[in-house]
Length: 205
Image (cartoon, rainbow, N blue to C red; front, side, top):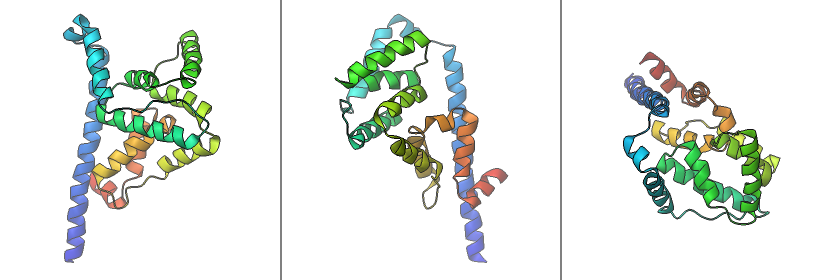
């Protein structure tokens, strides 16, 4: 009886954490939508300074350069490093793409110049899902791409805390952005991976 009561208390507590996490994700989305129609005054006055500071923060992480060799494992390690940095910086997707390709050196840079010209012709938006589509097609064999997507699809909370699960979810979603194109799909997949008792507790919260 005491164990059941303890489990219910733990589930309720975890449910509160999930509700808080979902609310935070919703608030962030609302803030991003609002910011799309607003430009800070200091950014209007000194856009170069804003970019300089953003680049300076990025470079403090000592991001690796990318040559684009024939070894998928090396390419994968570079991409993982970029994802880790961008998770810490919380930059816009456009800035993430710009700073990722800033690390390109030949022959990767030559490849990117071709892609950039194509994007300009086709008016392609600089967002992470578009970058990953091009990057995967060029550097990752289909089996590697499928493994990355499978890792994300199979992600479950298990013994992880809600915070640890959220971190893993955010990281792995970077490698399969097409599976979470909308905030609704992201939220649904996030909830699907939670432990059952936490789902129930969060639904009742």
